[in-house]
Image (cartoon, rainbow, N blue to C red):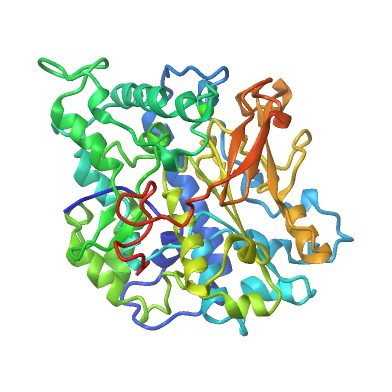
Amino acid sequence: MRSQFFLFAAAAYAARLPFGHREGFNPGQGGDELRALEEEIVQLEEQVRHDAGEFQHHHHQPAPYWGASPTSYSSADASPLTSSIPASSPISASLPSISSVTNTTAALQSLSSVAANYSSILSAISSVNATATLAYTDPSSPLSSYAPTSTPVELTGLNSTDPKFLTLDQWTLVQSYIFNQCDAALDGVNDGILEDPTICKFDATAIPVCGGASNSTCLTSTQINTVEQVFTELFNTEGQLLYTQLLYGSQIDAFRLGQLSGSIQGIAKSWYGGAVWNDSFYDATQMNQTDYAQADLLDALHGHVSGFNGDLSAFNNAGKKLLMYHGMADPLVSGANSQRYYLKVAKTMGLSNTGLDEFLRYFRISGMAHCGVGGISGAGAWMFGQSGAAAVPGVQDNVIWNMVDWVESNKAPDTILGTKFWYDTPSLGLEFERPHCRFPYRTTYSGSGAWTDPANWGCVFISDWQQCAVGATPRLCNADGSFN
Ligand SMILES: [Ca+2]
C-alpha cells in the first residue's frame, strides 16, 4: 500500500458530529460550529507551537518568516472582514457569513448538492442579490480524506525512539535538499518559496546516507524512506486516488503543527472515532484501508459531507461565483487537492478553463501555509485581505473586494496581489509583493529585475493542466482519468 500524509481542516466540521450521529445533517447549522472548530484548530496549533518551542532554522530566504517568534493568535485573525469593506457595500451585510464559509466542505456541500436551496452560509449573500462564496482550502474528495493525521504517525513513528522518525533538524536538512532541487532550479528565484511545488519531482536519494546513526547532516535509509512516503499520495486497495500528496515546501510547518512530529491529530481521531465508527476508544494510530472504505460508505448517510460533487451547473446557472484559493505550502491540507477539485469540475461539466472562469476561479498562493493564521503563515506573499490579520494598511489587494467586484460589477480577478512584510510585521515594512495567478496559469518570474517587484512576474498558461493520471505531476486522478 502506498501511503501519504494529509490533514483536512474541513474535517473539523465533520468531527463535530456528535458521537453516534447517524442521520444526515443540515449544513446550514454549521456556522457557529465552524467558528468553534476554527478556534479549536487554532488552539491546537498554539499547543503545538508551545510544545515545540522556538527553534533555530537554517534558511536562505532573506527574511525567514519563522525567524521571528511566532506571533500570538488574536481574534482579529479570524474576524469577519468588516474592517476592509465599507458598510455601504451591498455585500457588507453578508460578511459575517463569508467568514463562516472558510470551511470549504460546508460551502461546497451546499453549493454542489443543493444549489437551489442554499444553506444559511450562502443565503445571507443571496439575500442582497450578490451571490458569491469565498472558499479557501480544499474540498475534501472522498470521505476517506478525513484520515489525515494518524497516517503520518504511522509513517514517522511517535518520536525519535522510532527508526522512522526525523527530528526537526533532520527535516530542516531535508528541506535544504528540497529547496536545492525545486526552488530557484524550477522557478528562477532563490527566495525560499517553491512557486509551484506541484511540479517538484524531489529525489530524496540526494540526501546523504549516514554510515551509522543519523544526525543533522545525514539520514538513515529508513528515514529517507520516511521522507518519500510522507510525500506520496494515498490510494485505496483498488489503486484509486484517495488523497493528493503533501506538497513539498510545507515540511517544517508540518512538523511544527504536529503532523510529522508524532502527534495524533485530534480532528482525525474524532472524525473516525465519532462519525465513522462511533467508538470512543478508537485508536487512530492503527488507521488503515478498512477505515477509509467505511468512511466513504458513510458519505451519503452524512449528507455527502465529502463535498466532492463536480457538477456545479445549478450553482453556475444561478449566476453565482466561487473563488477558491489555497496555500501551496499548506502543512495541514494538501495544496494539490484544490487543483484536483478544479479538474474534477472541469471534467464533470465538460468545461475548459475559460468556461470555468465564468463562475469558478482558483488561485494558488505560493508560500502560504494554512490560511495564514496563528503565526504559521508561510514564507510567501500571503496577505491579501483574507483575514483581519491580512487586511492591514500596506496590503494592497483584498480578496473580498475582488469578490465584490466580480459579483457586483462582473470584474473577475485574474490575479491576486499578495503582500509580504518583513517577518510578517507591518511596522518593519514591505519585503515584497507577488501576483498570484488563477489556475491553470502558473505565476512566473520574468527572469530579470528584482524578484520583489510584482511587475517582474506574470502568468504563464499551463498547457497540460488536465493531465492528472499515472505519470502526471501532480497526480490528481485515477488511472482512467476519473476522480472517484
Ligand atoms: Ca522560488
